[in-house]
Length: 116
Length: 276
Image (cartoon, rainbow over all chains, first blue to last red; front, side, top):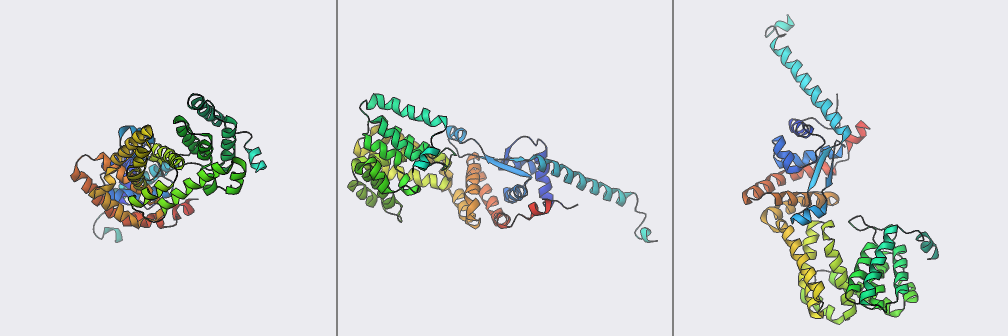
């Protein structure tokens, strides 16, 4: 199945981290820590996810940042559709991986067995 | 004009309340104020600014009204209050100077053009502080007072503009407007403006750090439409990292991803087409 976004390893890491608690908005640095990715990898992925509508982002209430004396933060959250698609995609990928692994370990008779 | 005013005949309820606040202040500072004329200036400005919004998302008219309120607090005269309410109509709406002059008198019109002229001196190229101060000296005290109130309200709502601009406005406020306020003896405005400017600079101090500068420089690759958003986001993240080492690390790593991000943002959104 083709997805709106190429499901590379880092993309999967990001989605897995965000799906852990899909309803909670997070800022970039937080996601990068949870996903174990450098921010240089993370932000382009977030831009892509946002583009295809899996993720949406918004500024926090500026008054909050004013009272704390810091710039406002950008928060990311999976959209309803995005969370659904991401779950599906991740499930399919792990299913395929599982299948491949089992075919490698049990069903494979020998180096040339399959052909004979 | 009449048709526009008719549209305005059912203004949002908050506008009435807001003007009530101005009237309340005038009752104390200017009991002799021509409230009807000020109301008329408000109605005209509100009708011309209808549909325009501030960066905060508020209706645009909230800004001229706030400027007039600041001026009312320091006991400004009727012409200044009208000019404050109308100060952006000539530049930002189809309302003409001739019509304004006809409706509100040459005095108000002169104040409005004076305020706009001051903007142009400031805006055209990068003038030195001395040049701007010299130009300000030529402008009348009343024009300067309107400009100060205008700046004060802009600084009160500065959090809604991009960070780099916030810094520029803060610097400009300290270099020019705080000094003008001091010269005119407008102490309350001077004190508040200075406090706002310093708070803004402090809040955005990372934009001028090595890490911030690196990010801002590389971010030039991102198309202008989304650049400020990313810059603001990253400078915000920088702010949450207490150790300088972490900030430099963050800046280097994030900067390394910028070319890729710039490419993503520039590309047509093919994902949408495929799924939709």
